[in-house]
Length: 513
Image (spheres, rainbow, N blue to C red):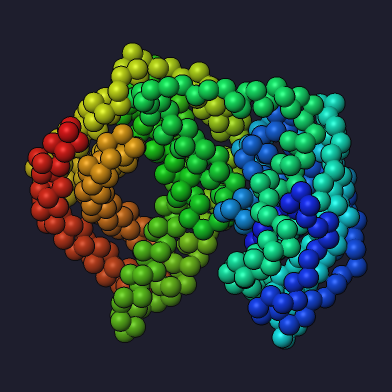
């Protein structure tokens, strides 16, 4: 079973005449004792695809022996200086659990040994007055050997300060002046692997030449603007995949949002990217969003129904309502979770990721892509707005009941698309787009609350049928159903005013200027 440890650390390297050993840190504020540990030799083999897909994403996968944490380690970036390390026991081959976590990066490519790094480590523990570990300071004499591509061998010394489990991150700032005074400076390389890859590259001159290639002059075009947004959302899907597999809180929602943003962008910016190419990709994104929604919708509904039950006085909670709701939520979660992981392992999903990569590598740009972004982007946002306006007007003119529920749901989807379009336009249109997106979000949020009420009533009816069949009271479930009906009616009464404020003509005019 894999365990996860969060690492908060800073890496340092010596100035040209700096020390080769750890400096004295006994005078650091808060440090009562410095405890020397036995030197250790760590032998790690780093795995990646031949084209270094994990390294490009700042991810490292290694098999390490020696030290106190021998085993397989998968390190995932969280923030600068912070990584989650997922550990698995030693085995000859890459553990399936770790390989599955990075499948959105590797897909069908093999994980192969890329670099071997041997470190002779000197360690000192910085302890507080109670003997607790504030931080671990280490100095590594490193030898790196390239195992693929006919690479070279490199040697260097690096220093690391890793916080203890319960230490305030500010302690890193407390220690740093002492390290700098001893001739150390923050390392430019974020990890041993990144430094090893750079120093053992068989063709460093060629790669450096590519880095120095001058960038294209002039202001970004509409096509470049749209592609930057599409690229960011595609990356969010791939990153979200890993979080979903780890069952990180809200990860399903975030991944689903990225798929929807991509699909909306293809439709909104159809004058920039050829829809003959993007529509089939959009259809696959719709499929993926639907699969993600199985779990996400369960999360939203479960939370809403629990809150509604908690609002009911105890004297009106008749029968095992909370127990039935817990069983319903747990059953849906278990089934949805298993299904979702199978979707992420499916050939259809992996093919979608490959298709997105191909789109970004050779984008189907139309003539409008060469235009300046302001006019092209603003027109796209306003086209989506006009579509929303028609749907809101139709919903408001529809008689209350299932027909209006459907019309309001369609308006909600249109509002979300306008909001996404305005958010995508912010780099090109600035504050007017930001304000417009905020106003469209107010419309979307109200319509979303209404749709959540519709879905809650459907779930309550299904729960009532189950409770009745089991001989339980359905009074409380009926009461909740009635309250949801009242909430939906209130949202409908509120909509005209919310729409009037959000759709003022001056807001649209600001996008054009």
